[in-house]
Image 1 (cartoon, rainbow, N blue to C red):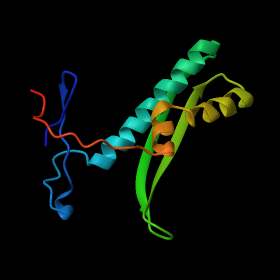
Image 2 (cartoon, rainbow, N blue to C red):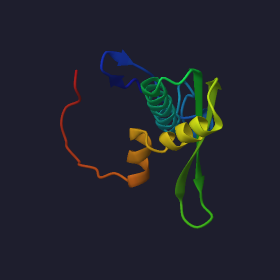
Image 3 (cartoon, rainbow, N blue to C red):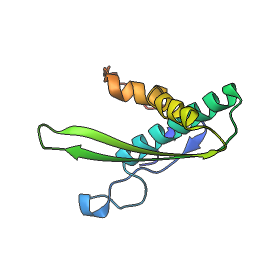
Image 4 (cartoon, helix red, strand yellow):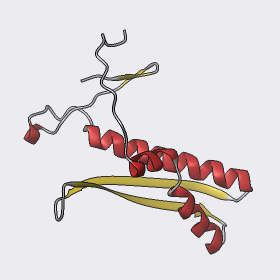
Length: 121
């Protein structure tokens, strides 16, 4: 499948073991990427607004299903912050990560509206 977003096209697929071709990231990989990108952008914006000397922010997100009590989706986020900042600033930035817009959306749950129409050109 080649979804579009704005002027960009990208592939999404399932692994061959799950019946796909393995030709692109899975939908959950894309969702994890969205959370990682939003986290990094939110932290960068916050650090810049405070004038903190953050030189690099790396964020990695993985996804799994926790079936121990119910099929709950679990996103694990690892954030690495480089720069000459204090431990207090680092702790504050990690707290800000919890407030990125994609994190808030996933945490609060969503509502879906089913609308049937032709896909956009």
